[in-house]
Image (cartoon, rainbow, N blue to C red):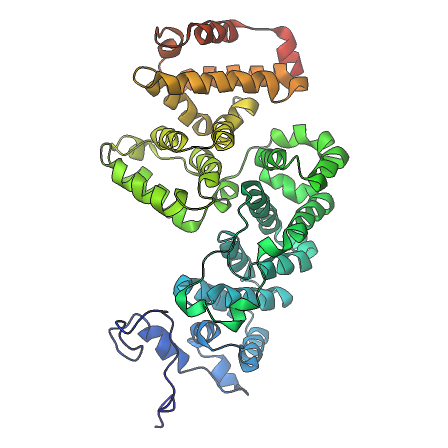
Length: 472
């Protein structure tokens, strides 16, 4: 049997590493199963037997990520030939792409975008998780192509995959809100790569990014409303952008109040942070015991917060902790670090005033529209426990949070001030009723708390204004 590769050419590599990696032909190499699958890749004119091979999806995914630039056209021919003959092939191909360790490759996202574009063009099942995976990694080199794919297929997505389109709008709104449009640093192997050099990033087309969000909001508002109240929160942060000012006047003034009463789905908060952030946060809140959390918090901060633009992600992290992760009773009783403690650490990690304000708004946002029987008590629990557990030793935190809560009640929406006050009062009552705290005595009876805030809190809790009930 002739060798699969000419003696002068090296086999394709999946891991962009050094010579310390074993060759992919070695059984000890993590690349070995992918390399073996690559050997079944058919010729430019595939036969029915080639297309029916169970190893073809993995082999084709491997080739998509390892073939030198430009990508050979024969791979696209094989992709669509197999997809036309076996409809399930597209989904298997997309799953194989997501299973490969593509972050380690020189230009993986450029190729993943190409694969997503081909699958979307064929309206093939399987491209949705591929695009969703890429959306959680913006910004990255060449991500302007992702914007083009989504814009090109916006109408199709609105009808067939509305959650994906809403996810894209939210991911780009959060990107604009953070004003973090610098491309990610490329690997050493990517430095002189023509494929990555020619790929445009979102920082080069900020106007197109704003235009995409505005056009989708105008044309498919009901789809975007799936995001719930966090859509309004994101648009508030972009209120000074001229295009969004016009959108507010034309569209949002009539619909913002209704959208605010729609709860934020869990998948919405997850897309605003990276998969790596989510994995590390969940590990801390599921496995790290009290007293051991400092080194994990330091590792997380060095990796994600102590980098340019990292601090601006804190409000999105707080929203994920409040709405995206609800621990079970078993986890809460296992002695691991609680959600409220992680939020408190994140608030103390903020050095910029506007980030602190946005993080506190993210923490209390569900309080402003809480309705007993509809809202989840787990969304409002972290703020309450943070205030109660900080009042004895870290009174400044409780004072800061209570003061901010009253500022929100008075100023967030002046026209609906009474309705918001009733929702916040309901949140306090439900937290006691559900046993999150035994009573509000730690706040109303603490001598360390600001006397002015104590009096204001007592007056607020005892207020049963009928006008407020009617307004709600």
